[in-house]
Length: 419
Image (spheres, one colour):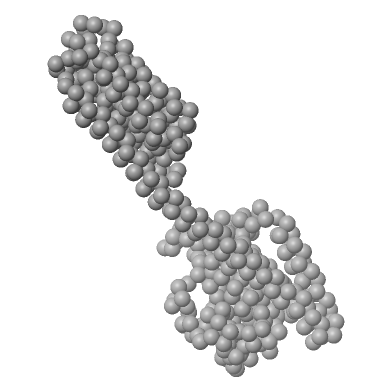
C-alpha cells in the first residue's frame, strides 16, 4: 500500500505538471483575449501558483485529508470563475484549460481523502465547473450540448478513478497480507532455528566438558590427567558463559586460524597425546588472518578440532594424531578465505553407520558445530585402519566431499554415506 500511494502521488505531480503547461499554452494562444482584459489573468495565475505549490509539496510528502479538502476548495473556486477567466470560444469545452485543471485535480481526493469524503470532494470542483458555466454570459460560440458533454466526461473520469482505486487497493492489501504472513513465518522459523542452535550448543558443552570429565575420572580414578582435564573443562565453561554475556563481540574476528589450532594442539599434548601439526597455505606464511575469517567460525573450527583429538585420545587406542591446517586467502585464486583442517589417526577406527544415535560427539560437537557456521564436516573410518576427520569452511557442495569420507552429520543416525 505504501508503494502504491507513493506512485499515485508521483502520478498526481505529473498530471498537474501537464495541466500547468496547458494553461501556459492556452494563455499564449488566447493572448489577445487576455491582453484585452489583463485582470482576467488572475484565474490562470492562481491555478499556476496553487498547482506549483501542491506539486512541490507532493514531491516530498503524502497529502493529508486537510490538504485534499483545501485543494478541492481552491479548484472549486476557480471553476466558479470560469465566465471571467476562460475565453468565450472554449468556455465549458473539454479542451479548455479550466476543464483540464479540474479533471486532473480529481485524482487527489479520490486517492488521498478518507473513504467517506473521497467521492464528494472529487465531484465538488466538477459541480462548481458546471455551475460556473451555467452562470456565464450566454454566447453563440458554445451551445449547451458541449457543456453537458464536458460535465458528463468529468464525472466519468471521477468514477473511473474511484473504480481503479478500489481494484488496486484490494490487490495491494492482499499483497501486504501475504508479505506479513511470510514475514511472520520467517520470524517463527528463525525462533525455531535459534532454539535448535542453542540446544545443540548446550549438548556440545555438556559433551565436551562434563561427560568427558566424568568419563576420564571413571577410567583413571582421579589421576593428575583427570584433574588437568577438569581444569580445562572449567575454562571452557567460563568461556562459554562469558560469550553468552558478550553477544556484541560475536561478529568480531578471532586471533587467527593458526594460533587457535596451535592452542588446541598444545592442550592435547599436555593431556599426553602426541600431535603432529602441519600448517600450509596463507596460515604458514604469517599472512594476517584476523578479518579474513569471522571469529565465530574460528571458534567453531577450533572446538571441533579439539573434540576430534579428544576422540583420538579416548577411543583410537593410539598415542598420536596428525593435524593438517590450510588457509587460502582471498589474494589467491579463490575469492574468499578458505579453511580446511584434517585430523587423522592410525588407531582402531570404527564403522560410522553403527554409531548409537544417542552419541553426541561426532554429530553435535564436530559436524553440527561447523555446519551451524556455514561449514561442512566429513569423516572416514574403517575398523582397524584409523579415522580421518575433515573440517571445511565455507561448506563443500554435498557431492564434493573428499573421496572416501562420509558426511559427519550422518554419523550416529545410521544414514548412508554421502560422497
